[in-house]
Length: 259
Image 1: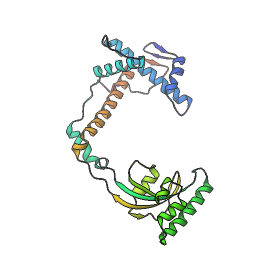
Image 2 (image 1 turned 60 degrees about the vertical axis):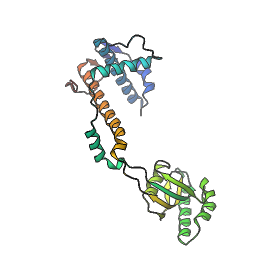
Image 3 (image 1 turned 90 degrees about the horizontal axis):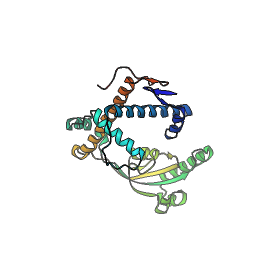
Image 4 (image 1 turned 45 degrees about the vertical axis):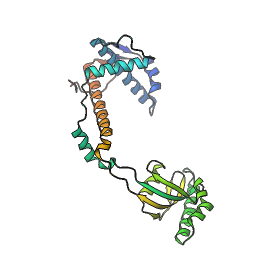
């Protein structure tokens, strides 16, 4: 049993709350559920202390919406959340230029020799086949002909053509290797969760730096949300440090982080 300023949170409440907190094991789920209930109780007690209520006539369809509206009201009243200045946004942009580029583009062909990840024998056989196809290509064999003969991808009907690709369109392990390769035939089979790929990069265009004005709003939204999360976390720690909580230990310092 847990008490929060003499208000009891029962084991039954914690068990009920656990369904909303998937975790690696039962104990971790119980801890997450207990934390959530304690913080919720602290919010409700603080709302009562301040006499905060929703405006009469405000239409909310569910109890969850009502609780969220009350929480927002409490945060607006109690937590000072600064907004990122243009100077801060510009500084973040300069420190993270690589994040603000258009996606590089490639045009590529591939031959897929499939093999399940969990089947070691199939993977070994697929690699051997891929290496033999790669050798044939280096000796002048036609990529299109070999793609139609061996590839188990729908693109085989098009000679292995994947068309123009930008980042995010293929699985990460394929993307990582193909986008870092030079134009031409990649000199080794590219391994992915699907099997092994023989890849020819026909065209490659590097991403272009986006101007600050084009990404300023995105940066400001990111920085504002980051500051908001930190401010709310500090506010929660402040409520915890001031409360008398028995049966649960947050390990929060008694010194409030928010004045």
